Length: 233
Length: 250
Image (cartoon, rainbow over all chains, first blue to last red):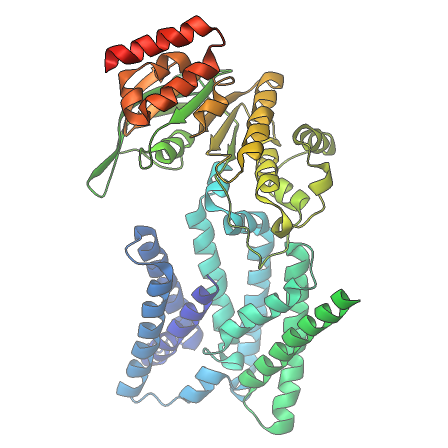
């Protein structure tokens, strides 16, 4: 299900296009389109017509393509490149406030539903037996992912957001002994990657998204090497 | 809702999925201190029946009533241990559970998993994982324990010791047990009632009664029926009796 995040991210470009076209603003467009896309996906997944991977593969790329078509047909003047790979120079101080708000909301939602999220991840039937409705938790996860995509789109870019959902968590997996530790370490690794990545992008004049991902992946390989050396001793 | 004495009472429950009848007119009552084993071929609707009884799935027809504040402990067949997430056994057993230290220690010693509590879930063997799942389902003293093919992935000695453990839990705790199991010859001694399911209830009753039921014999064959008879009766004459009954059916 890691690629669920990628699919939501892919649908965000359509949100950007519609947001500009209808004059509602980019963030509003992204949130509405990503949420609708997430709900559509959950609904189709429940009906079990297609396998999850097929469904994600079809919907994600369809959403991205429609997004690009909507933007180019209406001659909307945005730098698609910046949305695909991230460009930190497009971030305004208004965007920064949106990010603070988004981050607080995500921390709040995750903290208060932590144990339910864990149990649904482990086994949906086990969760059901203990009075959790997995549909609500999946909707919650969709909402959280939508917020994450909306706040990180301009920095990381929609093609690379999944990398930041997966790589810091995978790095922290090697170092953690519990899900809580893993979440905390992954957050710290993520923050460190973003800071170092932005410095790198300034130094070599590269887009911010790829620079952050390269730093983050380097840390990932270092953690494996570290683990390997420790086990050898 | 009227109050009922049974823990769970289902009447006339039917489930239709994709134009196929999965469950048909099921009536079942689970009472206090029952030990019911559901048997049946693959696709008989055993897991679906459990899901309906626990309230995970709403049947198309029929009514299911649960006793007020009924505490159910559920042990699934298996869980996907996700290697992408680190988690200790203790963490897994207690996540989202209201518990105190004493009851945790009690369950740990009852199921004999003291040496496992600090291990990671990802390193457990099949048998260890089943015991951990069982411990989790027992942590907040359920009135009813629901087990879905609990010993399916175990080897024969693992199965024997697992069913022995279930028997111990049943005799020591004030608990009812509802279990789906294929290993009928192994649960014969403990189970009080057998329910033979093939989308509808073919036959039900005490194990030795079910073993003699023509529908049971046609479904599982005479070998199974004879094996059950051997487990049930230690006395030689009754074995001969059973063979005579088999002869009549032929």
